[in-house]
Figure 1 (cartoon, rainbow, N blue to C red):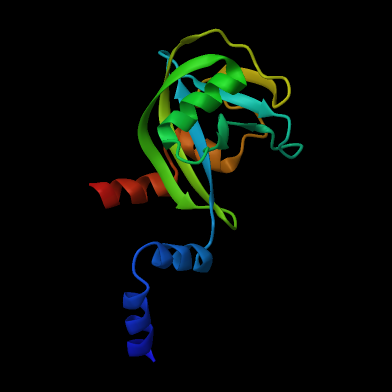
Figure 2: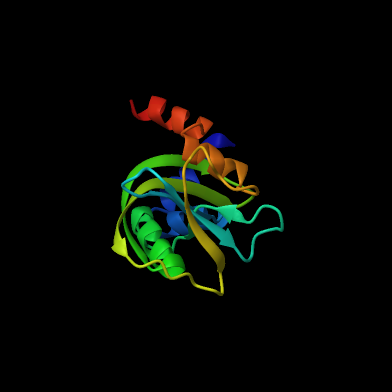
Length: 160
């Protein structure tokens, strides 16, 4: 049976192979998060309108557009949600997420702009010291802020 499958695979070379792979595999959305810090080491937190009550505080987050580099997603999402300009830095998280989602997070540095929230998505924005985070911060985001995400350690070990 394996030989038959291998033989058929070799026969359907090129675009047809890619079509079969596309049909056979899961399709993922990519959620991208930015751990945005200012010169004082404070982190940008947003109270998200669409997130569950009691867990609305978190980092700037959004979905990558097809073909977009993930660092550019951070820059775009922060600008759309807050009016701030940031520069994406190092990758700090890469993991499969809930169901058909991949989660990516980058450190990001504030480089300019004026804080103006998008009231459709964001209820409030606040610069916080990592040791003085508000109630209701997503636990996965708290771990990213404090550099305690197990995925940060795993990623460092894989790269290093």
